[in-house]
Amino acid sequence: MIAHYLPYLKLLLKGVCVLSFIAVSAMFLIWLERKVSAKVQNRLGPMITGPHGSLQSIADTVKLLLKENIVPSGADRLTWWLAPFFVTVPPVTAFLCMPFGPTFIVRDLNVGILFICSITSICVLGIFMAGWGSNNKYSLLGGMRSAAQIISYEVPLLLSALVVIMEAGTLSMQGIVHAQEPCWFFLKPNLFVAFVIYLISATAEVNRVPFDIPEAESELVAGYHTEYSGMKFAMFFVAEYTNLFIISAVAASLFLGGWLGPIRPSAGWFLLKAYVVIAFLMWIRWTLPRVRMDQMMSFAWKVLTPVALLNVLVTGWLLVAKG
Amino acid sequence: MSEFAFYFIASCLCITAVLSVTVKDVFHSSVWLALSLLFVACLYFYLDAGFLGVIQVLVYVGGIMTLFVFAIMLTSKIGDHSIRQVNHQFWGGLMVAIALFIVLVQVVGGNPLARLHAAGSSTDLKTLGTSLVTTYALPFEYISLLLLAALVGAIVLGKVKK
Image (tube, rainbow over all chains, first blue to last red; front, side, top):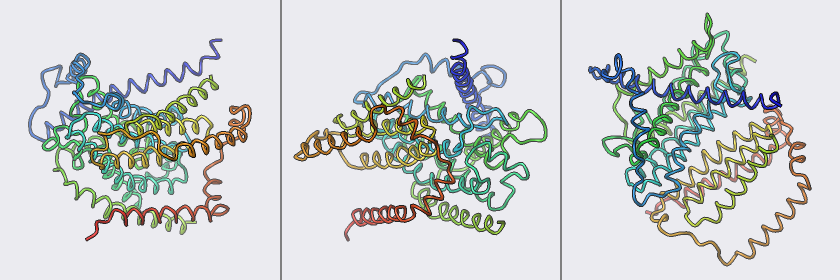
């Protein structure tokens, strides 16, 4: 009887592991971001709660848990209530095929990379719903900007992933990592171009500076999650940092050799590479100014997409020439 | 357990699909439609057709639904008045729906779950891709032509006359 339910128990346990990892990782990343921003802006950042403010995120979490849930008058209840789930659940689901190590993966789907790309594209709807349901013009504007941005940058993102898929000859995340055993992908010139395109469009996908116009503080308060408070706001926050981790982890697996490394443990290498990418993105965020909406759209369609298409063509030629 | 999962997904799909055509608020309607499309993707995953499931999410939920919602937001004041549930084509539409339902029941037969398992043998990506550019090249090109026509049409409609 117990043996019958064992597989389900195992699945449940894996789910709990993923959820705790996401929560802890988000809390750490929030602290890291505050520290990095402080470093860039030549100040100290959080210093009071714990050594170097390391317990600040825990204190913030407790605060958010205890805060009142305020619903604005005239809010569209259904969309208001559903939106945080639409934003939070997809990034959690994407961990299903995240290769932490040679055997350390929940399920190695044979369409792994496409699964991650498609499941995270659901977030757009959540952002839309948050913008629409809040009954606030800033939220609505933020939601619309976000949608326009994510649709536009999805194209170069998928095209740059396509180059990796062509080179590796497989869609499975583990297969792509194994294909990099002779040489990490970003060392090849055509794949390096894809890596740069991927990083730019992934930054836009998760609404970070220089592409953070959906939540531009100086114009839109906080964009689509202006009206959310307490635990619902915390869900948006966790989703944002989980998405940041996912794009960095995917970048690490697609271009930087994933869990491949000279010594064990392989999960350590994977996390190290992912965090290097995260640190790079944080550095960019606190260094660059924000671009304008029209600049951003024309950059996506007139520069990034043609270059990505050309890159696909060149990679195809190279692969055919190689035989 | 496996059967329970199927019936759970299928009933969620039915409920959200019905809700998407019966609710009056056009934005809610699109939310329910998105959910029902997601449940269709769940069914594909359940049947081991991972590629179809992924494409369903990517194209329908990530692409088409986003455009739907975008269009709703750009149409001014559409959220203020609720859409009408019936028009003069109601009875005709109902007839077609009933006929389609009968045909589908005939095709699927008595035990839908068994049929689904029989049909759900997963084809690998390579066969799918090759057949798309060899056996089914003509329909494939037709579809792309149709999409191109739709694209041109949208530009013509959207162009502001000077």
